Length: 261
Image (cartoon, rainbow, N blue to C red; front, side, top):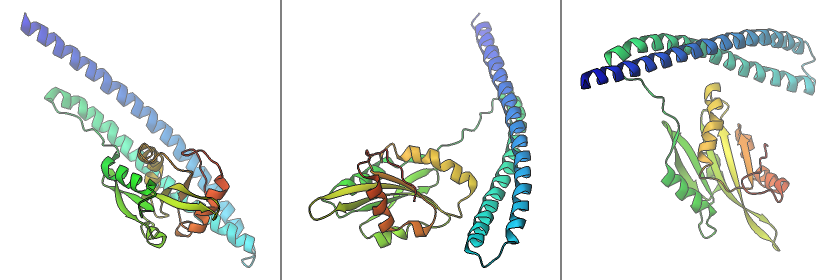
């Protein structure tokens, strides 16, 4: 009797798992279809943009507006090409995933397990320590930098010299910064805090897309600041621009002010 119950339980579990695999396969088919539609739209947009770019080239090269517009178009084309590559890679991955799911159904019969994709994690102790250090007025530490080490975000540096702070953000990196700046005048001096997200110009489209999720994760600890900045070029890492952003934020509530330079 016990063997019959065990066999019935295993059969039910196997049937439920097969149904789950079938649903996953159907979802993958839907995603692939949407990607194909997106790819077609990207192709159409590329043609329009190329035609527009050709017209821009015919403008007077000495005109400042024309030069600026040409630069923007070239930059847009570069980003669009990255998006096109991402779509193509995603289609290949989804096709591969569909094949893997079919193989996975067979693997169930032989008792093989599935693989789980790891999400971004935090080195909470070092990040919290750096965060509290910057917030401590009695500490000489005025900034901290947080970077990715594999699937985790860690505190990679602390310091007080803003010139050194600027050196920690490379073109191919994603990172976060937290700074304490003194604002006001002799009559009223106050400490204000900035949370900075850095996405270098050489960062891939896929990693750019992941940044919003990763930012939400680290903001679970770094929650108090007057201004939030999203920067993508070294020229934007400028202390005067930071102070100007704080001045424009005025009495912004901590943790809610967002100012893009």
